[in-house]
Length: 459
Image 1 (tube, rainbow, N blue to C red):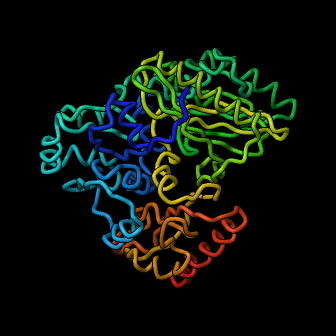
Image 2 (cartoon, rainbow, N blue to C red):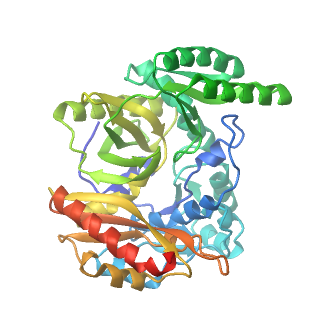
Image 3 (spheres, rainbow, N blue to C red):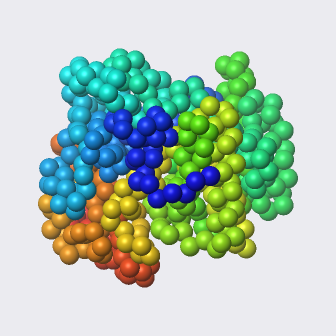
């Protein structure tokens, strides 16, 4: 397994295409799990939420992953002041391809498929560039077929197969990697057996969790601490199976184990089966929902060795199953410092993937960094200039300095609709400082300044 310092986007081209010279067309189709798991039977879930509109504007993260010769498809044109700010930092931005129209509840891919002018521009890139989605579903395969732009990576069927949590658990077991006690449930009958084991854990005062195989960002995850609640969910799933006559499931039942730190590590699987370890970071989560990353992760040499070895064997196993490209793995540390190296495998780009360009260009060796989101309450669309003015000297002004880069601005206004009142926005920032202590102090002051920007909205 290699660990060279070649720029990530160049290495990604080589991994996917065998050459670093072919431009890439990036698509930020976040939460592609909803497409992979659309026909899978797990926990009851809501099909459409206001949060979809927020998630779909995360497409703008791809701006800072692509290189200057690459392309990024976006649902809307970015704030021009934000683009000018990024360019002033010396970041070489990609070519922009904007959809003709956008539906807030559609992914960027779905909007692209409904955009004749954009489809024509993409078709002109057939044979010249290759398509790199956040994750490949049937939608991205349809876009490739419509435009003639080849998909760089594995087909949707392979991507779906290796992204299920059931797959993660099975290959971790096969490879002898430590994981929590648990059971996979692909039928109601398998659930019956798993529930009996779970009852024993609950009776012993332990906690269990039910997970959809294709749940993401805390969705499709249910923590259970008493047998009555477990029985209620068990009966509900049985009733659904009895009504439909379909006894299939895509569910895990696991013990909810003690942890001190969440981790995320990434590796890249090459066309020839080689595996490159990219990084490991501390993941910041709340209630199972991703909130950001701290860098460096601060692991001991023993912990880091376990993570690297796990990446090597997982990458080789994924290559054996026909997958190539970026893989992110969620892991964690227990209170004694032991490593659970596989909580789940995400064979797609991850939030941490979109931070790599900023790390390479702006973070001095030995410094600390924090990627996180800040809530903003917005009544009418905000301009980047308003945030710039509020942050003042805390906004990063150049490489080698301390400050925050606004990583994604489109999510600030994603939920704003005329005449509907205040909306919850998110500002994604990437903070850089010489030490962890300075980083935390900067984070606190930024949060205060951003809260003051919308203080009048809260009244």
